[in-house]
Image (cartoon, rainbow, N blue to C red; front, side):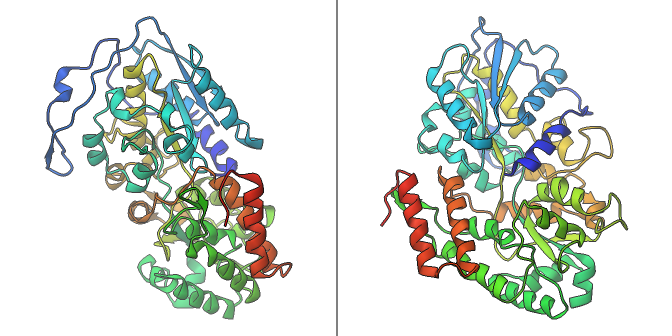
Length: 475
């Protein structure tokens, strides 16, 4: 996930939350009644779940938290505020991912152990697999070993499966979950949809642009005929392509180019050759400019999760209320393929001396679907009192009982689209080297579409760069 949004998001949590109460934490064991059979209120099905009884070391009074933004640390401070009997000091270490500084420092702290080792640490989508399934997975505690009733709470909260898959270690144990839903949708301009197809109804537009890429490119042709681009950049399609592939970049220790990812070469070239976009680059000035009609031609849409709407598009729309710039002229519909983009996972150190306290915090952040939980307040925009920013959250159950209407989307309830979007996403195609390999791949794709290299040469150069920089077999 890009830093521009995570840094913005972090500031949201500076605001006061209008939440009440949450179970207090102390140094005693969890009640043995937590270990009996539980019945899921969301499914009505009974299931027996063994939850480990855990205790906190009474000599430990500090919880060490490591993150790459202040987002999760501020959540934990809010947890403390809501639980005045919570007896721990929070010591925070924040190291930005800029220039790759965060992971080496975190790794050293995990390996070093001791009183200063992280009790709770965070990882984002681009490198989460390293800590849940890759080289560093053995440092992460199973949620059940923190006293969390994982099976029951997953069902009650209706957590999207892709996030569970990503957060499950090779031993089949859940070690990490997010708190934000990052399933993707297609975010499009209502006025342009009406001009081209006579309606801005999401139920109609989703059929105009999909399912599948053939219909998407037919829509691109319809839009071009009226002088519009379907997207701003080929990068707008990349995350949908990347995260809808069957397999990731590495299979059995070898570089793998999934056919759907290889097809991005052709998708990108067609966009450029036929003038279907403004040929910008995502996260560059021209890309932002297209959000407010300041580009060479007006752009119909973007692929992305709700965070792209709230923390990128809204601020670059040229207005702050309907009628100003493009603000209020947007809607969301299901994309041609299911995908997700970004997210932060919360993990615990398996060697923490205070597993009960850590478990209570992590449960409140990731699995509490009650109206007293973090996610309910975030989904309903009450982090700073009524009228705050509404966001998609990890819990589908929370979003189903929440109001996701946004003025930016012309009054549409975004949860109607983003709840199923999370269900469609695939979490089984990530690797621990995705950030590096993705950057290498996309650079070669641009070389090809610009006419600087042949398709074959771009692929060959991509393979060579991966072989030169990563300990991966390249054939």
